[in-house]
Length: 139
Ligand code: ZN
View 1 (spheres, rainbow, N blue to C red):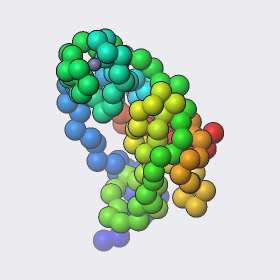
View 2: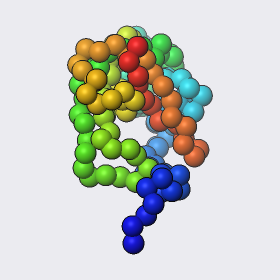
View 3: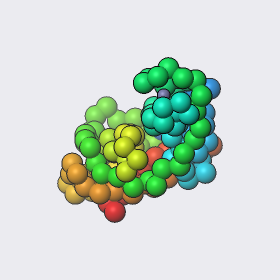
């Protein structure tokens, strides 16, 4: 049976990520349209992805700082297959180096042919069910 594509996009959501206790703040932040980054209270290093202790000094003390959401594309890949439900294809996955100096993964909202390494981007947030996903658009 072939699903009606428009109908399928309305009814089927993308697979949800596994969110552990260490990353809960990040996903809560995305829901509030914020990119939250851990900052070590001992040495001041920013880190992402979330983890309980600093990779530089092994301190467990940290606080959150909010990213500007601005950065440049460090790398990207245009995914054609395999196609997961709830996503549009081709899907451009980008690794963005934020102005704060850390890198995050998101989805490019621009045409795949317009995406390039070094392109300035700004964050967007895609709300879907109870989560929000990080995306980027040309700045
Ligand atoms: Zn540290």
